[in-house]
Image (cartoon, rainbow, N blue to C red; front, side, top):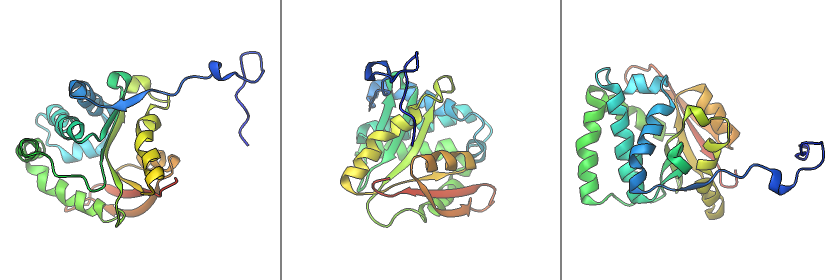
Length: 218
């Protein structure tokens, strides 16, 4: 059993003394620059980033990828959540996600091949490998999540995922994600995800790829 939280003099802490839960909301168009910057800065040494994006202009490519997918497309679909100040971000693909509007699809078709350059085909092939461990039925798929280094270990990563995980529990559907490091696997497992598949990236087999699923109800 976990001990009850205690106040500064050893007594039981009042609710008013406990830190408030981090505020999380759906992202808006005005948030796109900040949320893209947060996701781009969240994992400066993430191995997937250096594997997926060409060396030339990598930072700009990474920012544009998040700007388009998590920002423009995610905001339009209502599937991107942010903390106040956009210091934490999570963007999802919803079950039965409708096709983007024609103008948004045109942006995706134009920009995504550009940001990955010569790596586009191998990234797509690796995405298909990760998809092999996804649930067969309707589920939420975590496209990206990140927290600014300056505010880590404050519960923001879990908080920004909470709206969708609570919805999954209410609707009786699972959530799933792909991870490319054991650290991300451990973090996801702490939120109730379990590994459903373990593979390697396509063609070069350079990186491990784990698919994790969180059953409805955690």
